[in-house]
Amino acid sequence: MISTMNSIRNTRLILPLVMACLPLQACNSTSGRVKDSSTIASTLATSDARTRAYNDHVVVLSSEWMEGRVPGSRGISLAEEYIAWNYQSNDLEPAFDSGSSYRQQFKLRNRSTFSGQGDSKVIDAFNTGAMIPGSGALAGQWIVVGAHHDHLGTGTFGSRGTEGKIHPGADDNASGTAAILLLGEHLGSRLAELGD
Image (cartoon, rainbow, N blue to C red; front, side):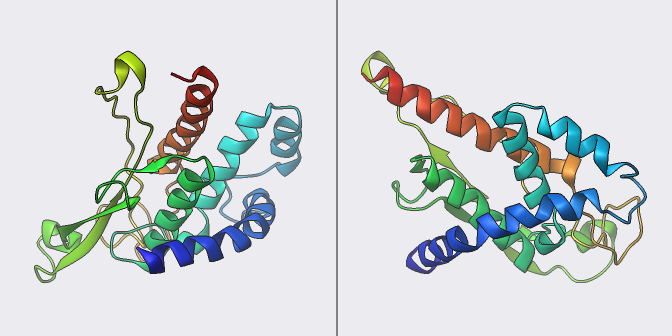
C-alpha cells in the first residue's frame, strides 16, 4: 500500500503535465481516424467542464503510455494508479482491505490460453474501487457501479486489428472508466453537500 501511495503521490506531480500534452497527441493522431483536429478542439472549447474532464480521462487512459492496458502490464498498472489518484483526489474512500487500498488483487489466467495458444500462466491482476459510505437512513446500504479498465494491450488475443500494435481502447473501456471517475467525483461532492 505504501509503495502504491508513494507512486500515486509521484503520479499526482506528473499527471497534470501528461494531461496537458495528451489532448495534443490525440488531435495529431496518425491513425487516420482524426482528420480535422480543429473540429475536435472547437467542440471541446465550447463544451462544459465535465465534458472536457471526461475527454481528458479518456485521452489519458487510452494513451500510448497505458500500452493498451492488458492485465499484468506496466500500462495497466499506470492506469490503475491514475484511477486511484482520481479517487483519492476526490476524497473517495478506498474500497478494499478494510478501507486501506483502492486495489484488490486476484489471479487471472493468461488470455493467450483462451485462444489455444501459449502456456497456462496465471498473472496478478487488480480490481480498482472506491466507496462513498452511506449516511443517515442509508448508512448500511450500498450502490455498486463499475466498469472494466483493462483492454487488449498489443492485441495478441481478441483483437480484430493488427497484432503487435498498441490497442488504445478508448471505447473499450476507457470511456466507461472515465464515466465512473466522473460519477465518483459528482456523487462524492453531492454527498458532502447533503451532509447527514
